[in-house]
Image (cartoon, rainbow, N blue to C red; front, side, top):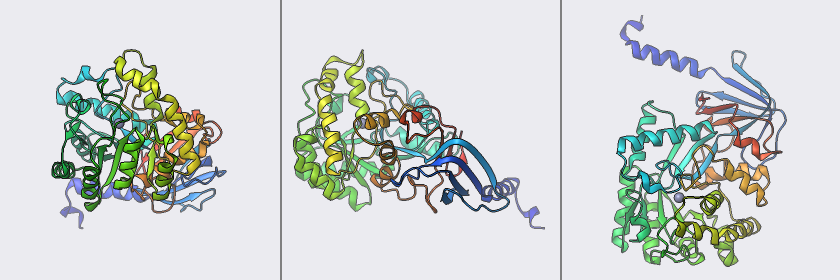
Length: 415
Ligand SMILES: [Zn+2]
């Protein structure tokens, strides 16, 4: 008798709620839970609504549960990429799209997000967008217009005035002096940022005279950015290649170091990162592709070629000293395309990580780097972001480079 008071829409909502609360039991040949624990055989996850109810080997499911059985497959958490730029496509020279209309750029972002999600990446941290269009992208996802991974957004990158920052229209908020840095950080928070990205050194993808080894921002400016962000509950990611800039950023209290290329030059800084639990996001793939890419402006390409061995040494030093390593690709740099994010895990394994450790870097550790204790591990109460892969990626990491068998985002099967 209540139904006549309900509109068609609310009846439909009610029906959807009922169907969503029916539990789903996913079973497979194996499971990797993202905590760092080894492979379990067989694997099973019980999903109720948008949450994981249980995960392990054999699970008692309610009698009316829906069952999805995928033998010879492995269940992992939805993967997390801690460093992407959804605004850009991975072209040799991104500047050819700088003058394109915003509507076209947003549609491209939506396609980049879709490719990322269907490759098994259910969360990305966007480490610098363009013109704050990424906030509109997230609204479109919340309105159900498009599907994207969960988006952790930085808004514009806060940088001191540089030629590099000026050469990427809409991507940077240049700020000089403590009060301007504070204002720049607050502007990103006001726009909807979840994390603040700052430049602590020069970059590779900048005009030739700007050196990746030179420290940027004063210690006071770095401290002001970190204190302003932390006071509002946001984490800070610092772009840093040179070891002096890395050290200053770590002392200022940043939460993640992006790239970290020359960290190996001072093991004391690596020890400090390990002690303070500052995460390294190595972005191995970015330098690799810039160094090899034809059509990449020559001054940028040579900067990448010069420091490939630094990158490799730093990765090994970080492993040796126990620096927490979270996976990030820097997707959108030349030939570093959205949807091919898992190639980073293959590079991590090639440099000495075990496949389980690489998967953990892209799940449980990445979630900690983002301050998201609700994702990243297949455990009761966490969001049901789940991927199922044909084969066993703990044996062959290349399996993650192929299309997954199934992807669940918050309990919804998206492929
Ligand atoms: Zn980046």
